[in-house]
Length: 231
Image (cartoon, rainbow, N blue to C red; front, side, top):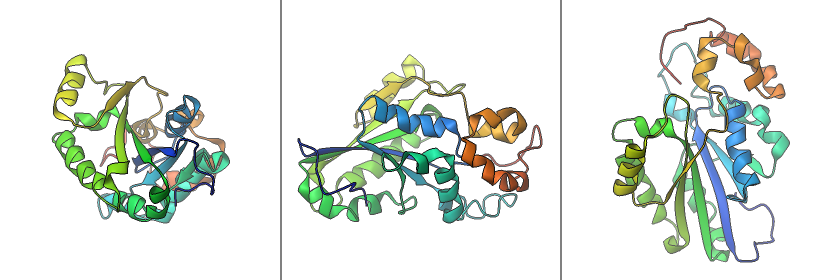
């Protein structure tokens, strides 16, 4: 569950950062996204949600991509284990509703819970994504016994080569009912870089991630200019 201990915040408001993704691999950029929200006080702690099941049978070159245990391990070895309990990994996989319904006892004790959705700007470049996010999170907001307590804020991290323009931001604000905050890049690291060659990107891996090099080799990311499905 989300509950760190039995002591609630003094104002009975809990701020939880949420970062979801396939994390293929989990790199220093993912780690810094969470740590920056802790450092500036935006979130009390941050939960990572590996989206492994979204890729079942999508890429035969990566047979274990749909394996949640593998995704969990990449996040833990990527630095989250060393930052526990301020950073942690969800056991609920990619099902946002479980994050709410399985923490109902905690939410009952609070005046309000703020979910800070930390997300890359590249996601908002995808067709119809804004409409999908609006629908999905409106549904999540109404779940549980006390839906009025649940709020979502979207923190959009500008990503290199996928930056949102002023016009993009204005359009999002006009068509999106949730509060949004545009934040600067925290790292140049990206999963795409690893597909183009791992050797040049060692510095973007947390040291314990090196334990997973055997899997990276199986995934063929040592090969420069690899083509195929993107992560």
